[in-house]
Image (cartoon, rainbow, N blue to C red; front, side, top):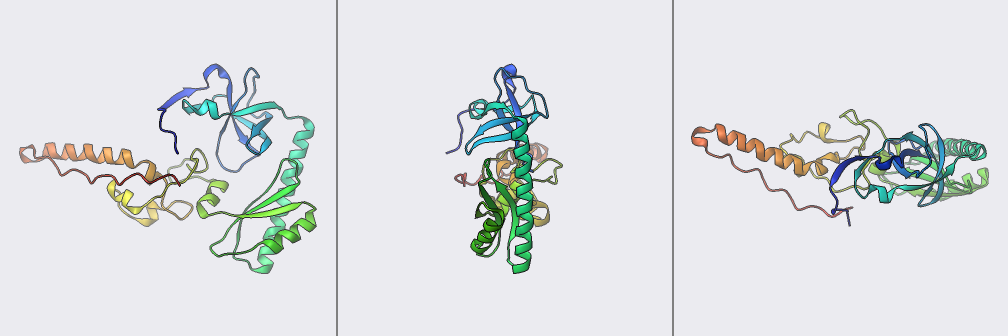
Length: 262
């Protein structure tokens, strides 16, 4: 169930105890809020933070993060310590392992002509397990490929299939608005999006303009629906004032019932 009890705000780093970081050199534009406490960190510094999957290395990207919700401070990750030289060296080794694994997977996929698109290879903190994340329009088993990769790298290898929206969220990018993709920056989940949402907002249903980088309808059609309805209502009111006798314009269509979170 989504959060609905707090209002949006623009509280910027109250008390100077929060920083924004990029976890494990992620390619997307997501900024993770970390509670640094009394420790004064600087941009570009490597630190260790506590995540749902255990400790993880991160790079400080901003010392003035914007907390858009009052509850964001309670969801901040916990700062553990500054990253040591050894931990930074281990992280570089992990990146090299991921690149090596990705090269092997791409070669195997091409040799076996599998209908698979590799999203990323992600190694754990201790480099004992590797996750092969991929997308495919067909039902494909990578069991044999994972076994071969495990024998070659000497670690446990698993695979996980994701949809095109999750694929785009993982890789990140720049949208037609000129900003980083919402899904890879601040959105926590996906909601159903329909072409009717565009029609309600008075947007011409042109697939080439309504389709995002993932090939699906843009997420902003859903979360901007309420504002679009309000804009249409005000426009209808202005048009009504200009009509002979001040006859009001017909009201815009009602919004569809809100879909449950995905």
